[in-house]
Length: 84
Image (cartoon, rainbow, N blue to C red):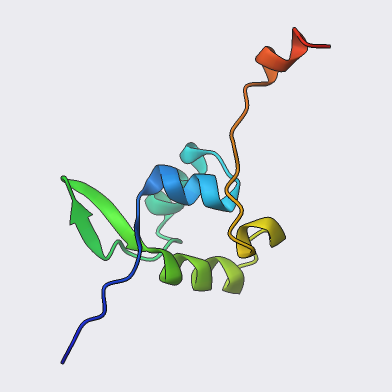
């Protein structure tokens, strides 16, 4: 049986792609609501992006822009106050 290799993503990348904070993904892990990691890469958990996408869609955690593959940039609101 051939095991297809998916696209490994870590906690930071999951947060980025789903448009949430990293701490949110950490909380999902602690509560056991996110699927179990498929791999360990460099001693850190890694998930198959396709599995995360399916889970996020099924649990309404996937934004429309994330479905389109758009990555979110986390911004620091304090930085933007200077520009106003």
